[in-house]
Length: 523
Ligand code: MCA
Image (cartoon, rainbow, N blue to C red; front, side, top):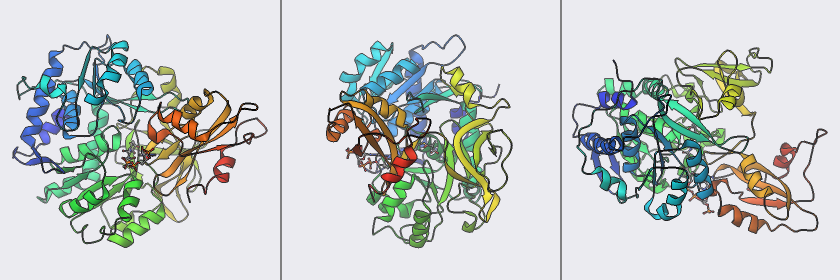
């Protein structure tokens, strides 16, 4: 039986020369492909030695990980796949209350955190029933590597079917609690293989060229962990691997690179670097942007500065990449303001509320079907059922239109979101979750959390708060309290205290009125 474990595909695609560089760090440390095989072998050996029971329905045990980005964090992800277990990456900014929720929801058998946070997080993990807690630091410190060290370099990758669970990625929920998107080996490998071809990695290999991917994204989301890392691993590329985005380091490395992936904030920060110019981009063949809307002015400024047209694509944790501007053909095929065309093998439709297809230029709900679409939310069958149409299309929650305004009919333009979502510097933030925390505070009657334009993060989280009776509300104190409880990127960067919130005839808070009122807050 063919082994559909994603790692088996990565292993099969490794170039024959195992001494070749797989990954290089800013400090100049080089991990060869052989290092990757041996390190993931030892880690998978340790994971397997724990004899972690699968669920009654065959669902594999979970390995939850909240660590800072490092080559070993990537190796731990790959080893988890190799051992046939399910990987659960957690944003390094999450605080204890959030970690408590995720561990209680995912019920992992293993939790890996940083050495610094072990004292605070181990009791939470034990209370959630986690059997094995270990640590991994940013510089190969921590107990995880010590425990894996005695195991053999060689490891037979566990057999997995395409439909078997490979990862759970938490995406915040409009109802305030995050939902775990279940991604299978088949979701991950089908999408990686499509992108290998669609973005020209295969063509580079076929012409004997070696790609070098500059990896500057976090490893706890789809963009950095799957789209960037899988593209490099499946194409035998070398990764220039940055533990934290630093525009000056990117500029230093660009002359050695051929591909870069980023969220729009990374591009606006690069444009703010005087030394970022056409010359440093001389060997680059592809700049990809996603996770948040790329402003047309950023696209134009980038093209002006470098002569390169950024390729914008559209993805979600639940569907991986679904739509992309084209790579082949002239850069003119990349149309600023659109996210391009549905990827091969992926069906995308835009429908009216009654489910009928929208005409070109007509705004409707974006729905998707294909091997890239997840199987559902972890332990939320009702929520999952709501998100799929009776005929099996996934409701993205985004609105948009094909064609229109002189654009080719095949091109999709996203026109906003049906759901209450803020994307700040590429991170999804759901207002309901933040409103919940603010409304619990003494002296607060109610609050409305909105996204307002921000020059660096695209959108910034902001809040409008109504005090209870004669109580005053101290905005700085609300922010300080939130910073002690939730991930920093979710904390409002500005809070306004008002008498009351604007409501429509139905009594619903009019957030659009608030967005308009405060739209220039960060201008
Ligand atoms: C950091 N801060 C933020 C953000 N990042 N605030 C709002 N939004 C953010 N994204 C806070 C910090 O905590 C700090 O707070 C202050 O802002 C300044 O931080 P800074 O040093 O600028 O932050 P940084 O460490 O440089 O991070 C900025 C960043 C990072 C590099 C843009 O946010 C990032 O890597 N974003 C990429 C996220 C990503 O990978 N998204 C893909 C999701 P204070 O001043 O209070 O200390 S996957 C996805 O969306 C789908 C599936 C897809 O299609 O890809």
